[in-house]
Length: 174
Length: 82
Image (cartoon, rainbow over all chains, first blue to last red):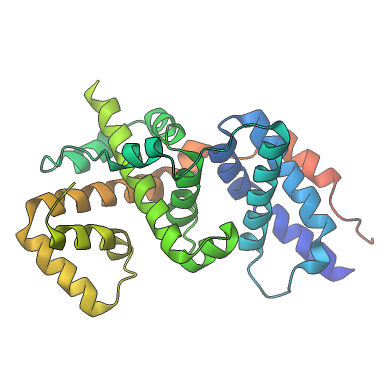
C-alpha cells in the first residue's frame, strides 16, 4: 500500500492550488471548500485510474472541473453560455490603449480589485486564464482537462485576459 | 477592434504570441506588424496585462486552503497501513 500513501501525500500537497481554482469557479469560500472536498473524495475513490508517472496536478484539476460542472447541473444554475452575444460583446471591450497605462495599472491595482475584476469574468474564460497564467498548463493540457480543442482554449484565454484587463482598467478609472 | 485584415490576423495570434507558442516565422510576422501598428501594440499590451496580473498575483489573491478544509480532506484520505 506504499504507493497509495505516496499518492495521497502528493495529492494533499496540491490542496492550496485546487482551492485557488475552486475559489475562482465558485466565487465564494464555502462552496470552494465543498468543491475541493468532493474533488478529493472522487480522486481517492478513483485513484486506481491514475497512471503512475503522469501529471497528478492535471488529473486533479480535471476532476475538479467535472465536479464543478456536475454541481452546477444538479443545482440547475444556468451555466454561463460562453458563445452568447453578451459574452462575445463583453469580450470585445478592450482598454483605451493609452501608452503606459497597463504598466501603471499593474503597479497600482490592489489584490481586492484583482479578485473583484476576476469575479466579473465569465467562469469559462476565467478558468482557462487561471489554468494558463496561474497554473502554467499548456494549451494542450488545458484542452484535455476541459475537453475542448486547443484553438478554443486559446480564444478563451484571449477573451479572459482582455476582459480582466478591461475590468481592472474600469475599476481604476472610477 | 481593428478592421484591417492584417490587424485582424495579428489580433487572432496575439495570445499564442505573448505565450511564446507561435512558430518562429509567424512570431516574426506578428512582431513586424506590431512595430508598425500602434492599435495592435495597444491590444498586445492589454493581453500582456491580463496575463501578468495573474502570474504575479494568483497566490496572494487566493490565500491558502483553511485548516478546517485540510483536516476534512485528511479524514477521507485512503487508509494507511502503519
